[in-house]
Length: 187
Image (tube, rainbow, N blue to C red; front, side):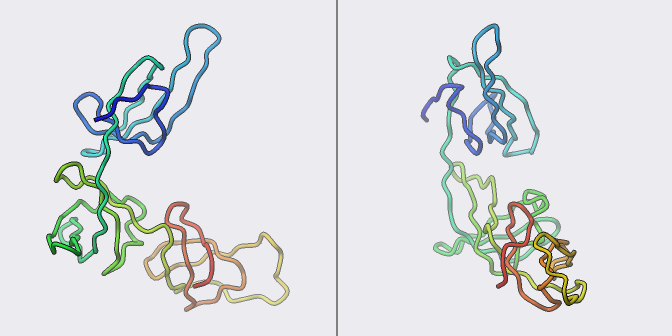
């Protein structure tokens, strides 16, 4: 595995640190008035979700891990575990539902997701960045309310609340950005 300097760590990088696999969530480069520069890195453990703040100097060497990404299809949820299937080999893998966090409601039956593997161990699930959802409840359109920055609350078919423009009506399909949890466009 390639070793990188501490100042080359970027958000999203997967590192082998203290006998565990960690993903860099946030990286701040600090140049104090006295002493050498360093990278303040917020790490999240891929196996158990623990968080860790670590300071890396530019001279520090860190193992960077490359995870294999595979497209897999979501089948069902049972007892807090999500079941996915490899579309080439038809092998199934189970992952805990809390791995997705607040993006869990956007996971739909039959949806293709990206699962990251370290050797044969499945570690992470990524939902598509844009998902189509139906608006089940929102306020009716008010004539003349066309201010540029006015948004109204809406509840989607998966129970998530988002702010939508005034022209979006009930029972309409919209596209939601799963990273920012915001309205993107009409479907």
